Length: 371
Ligand code: 8NA
Ligand code: MG
Ligand code: MG
Ligand code: MG
Image 1 (spheres, rainbow, N blue to C red):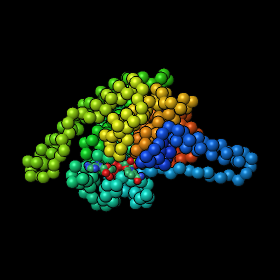
Image 2 (image 1 turned 90 degrees about the vertical axis):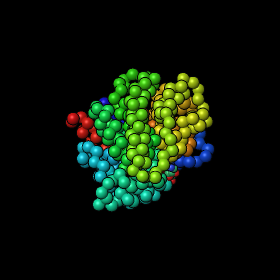
Image 3 (image 1 turned 90 degrees about the horizontal axis):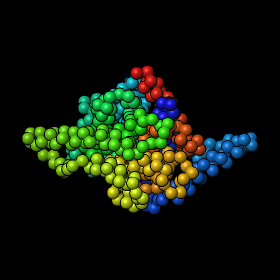
Image 4 (image 1 turned 180 degrees about the vertical axis):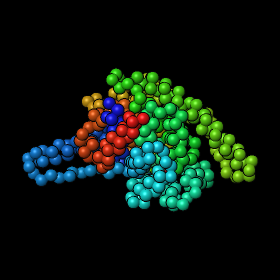
């Protein structure tokens, strides 16, 4: 059912961010450590329920907080619901307001300059602050991808061209580097594709990658070509900004690498080295796609008794690095395929923002279904 899958994507993304946040950038993470953390969380819920059943006073229990990833995704979801379309000025204003209200959600080091500038209601060009980042080259952080899932869901059954254009404009509010844009497109394409596929039979991972590449290849080429044209125009008009060369199609190459990884037993070290777990888009967004497919193939040692969404989240966090962000992006894709029932109740009850995600999911589904 569409409702379960839209909600599944949003809720899985929230719990992955909350659970992953504790491990962000910690040096020694592995499957056992992540499993211990989720088992503890599950036990806490069981103990709490027992106490309530015995008539002892209800305790709220520990609730894990969400981070910037969810804060920004919520702004996009709320804006899409209110305007029934992408309204970049409104999304920018919401990003700024959220940041102002709760600046300690773990925002990226550089994006905060943009978020402060976006608070200015009279800003003539909302994309200007992002364009000025890093001496005019723009941020290539993964902040575009970590928040884009609600848009991938919103665009269900709309033409790909629309999904592409809307994704690019929402990304450019904070990230204008072509690597950030293509990475965000990879994530929104993946969420959109996962939601559209028949989930009554097991996922055909090879077919998923084939369809994803079919979407990504022309897009990646187009985004780099546009950038080259823009930079060459600037050069001719005397603008000094320099661009380090973008060669080939690095995202498509990484997606091809995922196909190879799925055929053999790949250890975490190789995944970290060749796909990456950094805060940069190119070194984290393809990794999220891989984590989704690894969980879907149910091939993660130590997690055999768990469902695919759980496996994806546990595995993504176990890789270390930017754990909350890789996990939230992977979970958004996985939840869109497997649905809300695949996210354990205990996880849902332990994370801040799940109730809102359920509500956003309901309203987004109403909009999609009314088209
Ligand atoms: P961003 O735009 O600030 O980018 C993140 C970082 O990437 C920057 O601070 C730079 O170090 C580097 N970077 C990006 N573009 C360039 C460039 N053109 N040249 C050189 N360096 C560059 O923020 P974002 O929104 O993309 O960040 C996403 C990540 O930041 C997420 O993982 C998110 O969770 C968060 N984050 C949180 C913490 C934390 O304290 N919890 C720390 C780092 C990042
Ligand atoms: Mg974060
Ligand atoms: Mg950020
Ligand atoms: Mg992060």
